[in-house]
Image 1: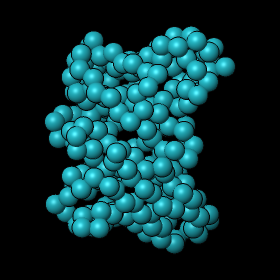
Image 2: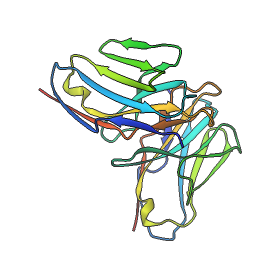
Image 3: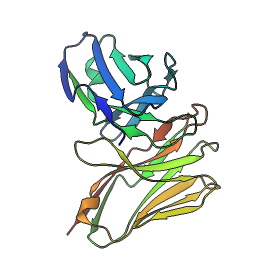
Length: 113
Length: 113
């Protein structure tokens, strides 16, 4: 079975802190994604990557950056966390090139105080 | 930009009834339309998908229909059971992004016994 593992299920950070959310997948998938989930807003795409060191902006990249140094790992970085970044963050992976099933992790709930 | 509208936002049915969730999309180049189910505390999981060269697909109690001309697609669940209670998301592929998906805002389905 495909497994997408997000390093932290729950995080509490202070405004202005730098935050790293880590995601690892074990199925050699080329594509990896970061989504943000908020009540009433669904899942919104932050960034995605289709290869090592490659990244593409999604719908809401402002305030975020990403890193993909190894194929299996995709990190989401909040350079200076703000309260409006309090949310559930979901990582996903899929095969390339044909668009297909996304396999999601269980999510990281971030609270910024 | 691309947009996926999903209705209704909440849906309550009695066990054994049918449930229908509808989505519309804006990008005529979208060619892949999955549906995800998210249970409490978990990441979304694919339950059924359809590609643009197919009008309907069925898997046991769930079916998806696609009308490319009207740019809408629907999820049909028959003989609903309490374990069908969850949040359901539709999604459409984003042409420019190649392999990413844009999601609807979700439908909370409650099945009462």
